[in-house]
Image 1: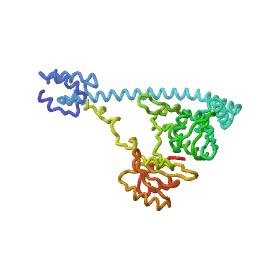
Image 2: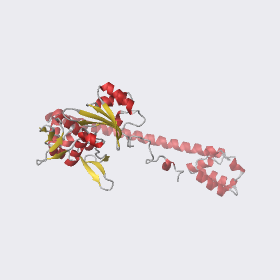
Image 3: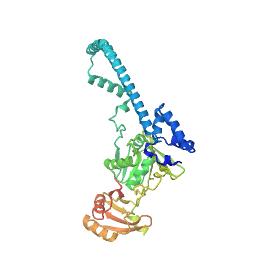
Image 4: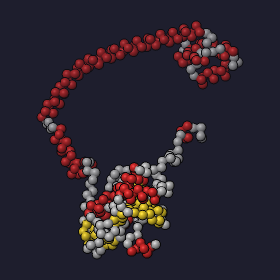
Length: 275
Length: 109
């Protein structure tokens, strides 16, 4: 590095790579090379700018820049002039074509008046077709699954018959045994299934009681937590013995707790036996 | 590698500190049918730091019912109350003992 280069103004330097190249080449005799550059800078803009960094002959530089600027101005003026010409041509063309455009617009309006269908009727038509062919996309029907209300009858004095367990389990796409297991765990009783596949529960239960339990079952084991869809499946992973809700609508899976029968108090005669 | 900013931003598998996913010890309130239209309410899973005897005393007085504490090998200490006291017990637990509603589960019909 020569002293002349150390005195350069670094802010003026634009391209590092080129500078480095210059340094290596100009190391032995900077002055001569600078002269060379001075000669070259008049030819190209980039070189001229770079030579500005060489700081030694500023006068030459400014001249060169002025020359470039002048050239630029010339260019701009020429361009502007050509543009003006072009725009004039364009306007002429427009004036010629404008008449045509208006004509076509009028034609379009007339056509519209002839075949005018109100938007609302079009919309109605669209929705009727959509409802026919693709009812799920019509929307607004989140609870497409209609769960029949539980039919509960009294069997004697102490037993309750839950008639349509199988139907409800089928609608919910659950194994009836799973549903029955949950019912027993929640109600804290036991029972059996009779010949007509009805569920017989020990104890007295009303329809509304069963319904509230069913509601909780659906909340916990049927509804997809992500998309709130009831179109789900319960799968058992044999590897880890966990149950998973697999949503058929959104494809998400979620693990659910297994049914646990909680603490049962010992009642009546049983109580004394235990203690 | 760790110098690259993109690679050390944040670990999606790190523990987020959410307690929600952890299995919380629920308080279960159940109901059992007895003979006729009589029922029994059982409360299991009340944390050990509470004095069950004192709670029972207050509950019995508030709900005007009898009750007792049963030690169960699986469920621990269980409060038993006569009659259907499920909602009342839950309100008591939330209001008087400051328990969170999501940690209480009511079972039965």
